[in-house]
Image: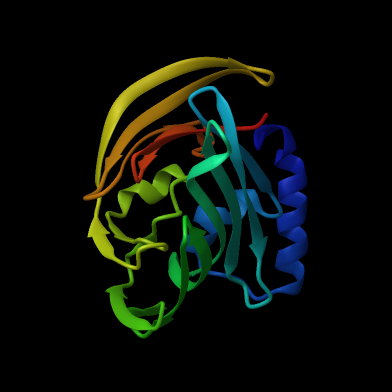
Length: 226
């Protein structure tokens, strides 16, 4: 999807650079190839369609990058009884190669969670449901699974639970898949944390192509649209 719109992305990036201050080279390396791009994902449980997600990457007026994400998941059993639901809006701001701003509004099952965070000096300070916490400048939010190079950062802030944790990442080899855009060679990883486990597959552009994610006893199958 990104490959077919490369010239459009570069044109959009050039437009943003013309009217905004330059961001750091490290931050541009993370997001510069995705300016103005929106990624769409379908989410299934088994063979049942259960939700969708999208992420949009934008250059901000101060030269940073914003990632806006919207996720909606509804897992039901016979009779329309919900066994898992998630409605979540996330805004992540990156500058100097690190997370500098975070705003989250998430309703998981019956629990409503809000989080805000900003980089202050060498620490990231956040508030989750009124409780204040801090983390170092190398942390990433738990939503940041879709960019392969971000897996190098092991310190994670869970945007729903409000907890810090270390994740373990292991490469599991390659897989070749046929798509409407041609054949893709995917890089696979397992990602483990105290409460969750995921298997992630990334395309040659380093973008998440598909994943299996376990959360609260439900296995979500995530697939990017062509």
